[in-house]
Image 1 (tube, rainbow, N blue to C red):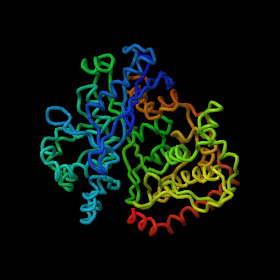
Image 2: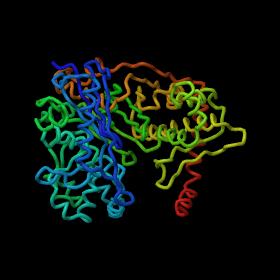
Image 3: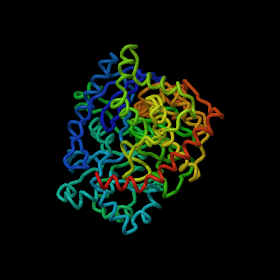
Image 4: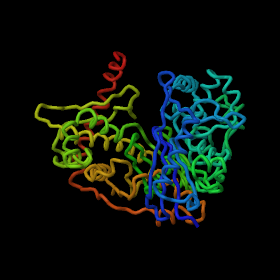
Length: 507
């Protein structure tokens, strides 16, 4: 039996490879920047060959960093950003650049579909909202705008499925990723010709890949891939999984009524259920990696990247202080926020720098700033605003019937004790923080461990490989203070609807 598990995580900006021991300890991580190209406004694409080369480079580098022999790797799992589309032609070659999940070229397609009531017809199959970067809309766009490419489609893949194909030579998807694409009958857990006909995509039905479970062996590393990556030929590669599933598993969230909140580029708020939650107002309900369970997700690009922007633009003094003390600038920010007690500031922040969940034209803003406020007050308002953005999603989940008994908090922001406590106080459930940094890659690696026979199931994998390092219990005295500010946050959202639209027209 091997000593290590390899998790591959292809996000929107970086291709990562992380090596773990069988107890979930991170041995080494390597990453290669995945360059995005912008052929037209609103288009975000990647050269698929360069994407593979970057992933192969990350794998070679992580093996070198760890000093691990290729034959010591028991299994390989992969994850990556959901949606977008990565197409192969009928010869198994990349058909065109891959399209990423931030792409908006198909927005007009969705306008047409909504005008003729298509969402109501497909929702009983998909249980999710339309989104411009989903494969259904992108395929329809290609049919209209690139018919020569559309006619040559041989396989419709997600990003992690393309990497899996390059590793094994086998074409396959997995249930979790595919159930988020609006190409699948989620409750039936299968493809549907009727669904594809409703989209006008019946001719590419046969290009949908066969589906594997996340921990099911989908192929083995080929000799060619072994030469390119440094891996051992024959190493098993499992079906892999949607990045939100991978993050939940990497954080140890695997049980019904357990939530995982991820603070990263996106505010991801997901809860595991035994039965699907069916509500058209929610973002999506998908299949969870553990067969028989579902995952309901609410999300928007309103989380910790707001802090990254603020630090880069406005925190020169904090960066100098961090350099002087030899610590992270974010630790200095945490200290400044912690220096002000809950309820000590009247400033409200909307975390809409990179989009919102309230209106397409919404923008970020600080409200109620006075001359006596300091940068610490602005930082506290920003931290609170990000929490309120997550809370707005949690409220929608609860209103739709989700029960949340416990929650795991993940992402870069979870390293902040003051921020983690804000989440517990505001959402009013304990926030559990687990060990490890590369949780998505760890979730993929644990799936590989099941496929390789190291763990019986996800319960055993999490028991052996994930540890809770902190628990933040809600402080009852803080909750009313935060909820009063959240009410003002929401009132400002309502008030700003027309001004946001007017400002958008000016810009």
